[in-house]
Length: 94
Image (cartoon, rainbow, N blue to C red; front, side, top):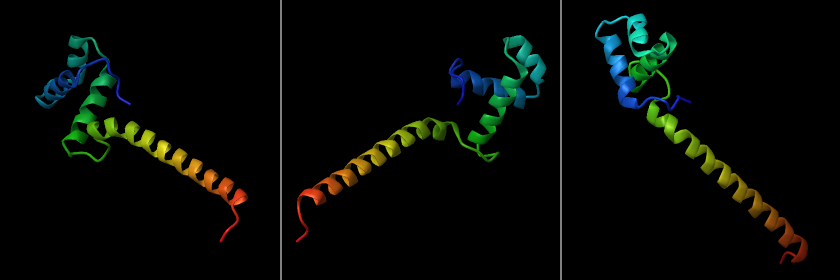
């Protein structure tokens, strides 16, 4: 999960600086962030642009909500199955 400390616009601008030819070391030093952070942001920018395979930023935002919804549906299914078992124990089949 990406760190939420810097806005996406800032990350894109940093990636644009790398793309423009500035060295990662200079950018990191000037902005007071680690070189590894710049590399990670650059890679994510390339993924978002479709130049590298991977999970895009928008997909990363959707994933937790999707996992929560799946968990809710699995819970509802388990409750329904348990209710059916209980009803079958009380009501004889036709």
